[in-house]
Every structure is written in structure tokens, then in C-alpha cells.
Length: 120
Image 1 (cartoon, rainbow, N blue to C red):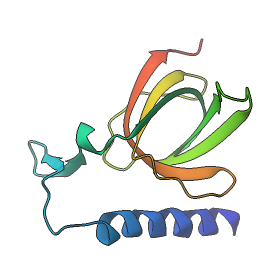
Image 2 (image 1 turned 135 degrees about the vertical axis):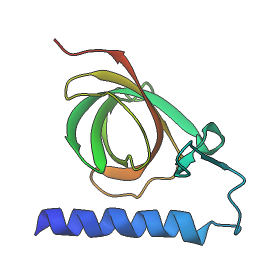
Image 3 (image 1 turned 90 degrees about the vertical axis):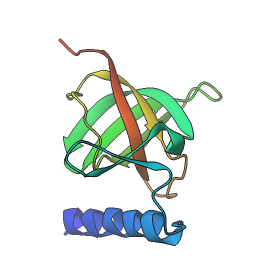
């Protein structure tokens, strides 16, 4: 039931971000060689580093330590259309849209994922 609720929440977030903020064009989106629309760097508003806690397509769970108050924050990020090689335990650099749902964990949309170091 919790998984169903999470899936519905993430799907709602996607729809709100895609259709609610749409101008009717794909100016900020790039099409790859097979015509699939991918998010471009123009959509990245927030970048941080963290550790991958869980990967449950289409989401990834990231733990990060805030440099402001030294507290752990956990993010559940949607990764649809994002090619990545991150595995559980890897340290990653994450780009996001910068918009987060105030939930526990905070939910948002990833725009890019770069593996900084692999977990042994």
C-alpha cells in the first residue's frame, strides 16, 4: 500500500511539473537519436552530493549531509529519462530541478546523476 501511494505521489509530481509549468514547447528539452525527449542541463537548478541508499525505478533514494546545519537529508528523486550507472552505496553528484515536495523523504526530479566514487 505504501509503495502504491509513493508511486501515485511521484506520478502526480511528474504530471504537475510537466504540464503545470509547460509553455507548450520543448525549448528546454533535448531529443536524443531515437526521438525520446530527455531533460537538458537548462532544467538543473540545484546540485548536491550524496550516497545512494536505494534504487527503485523510476526513483532513487539519496542521503546527503547539509553543510549548513550538519543534518542528514534524504531525497527521493524521479529519474525518468536519466541515464546513470549509480548503484546502492555509490557517492554521486545529483542535479535536480530544485523543486521539492515537503514530505519525508523530500521528493523531486533529477536532471542528471554522476557517479563520483563507487561503493566497494
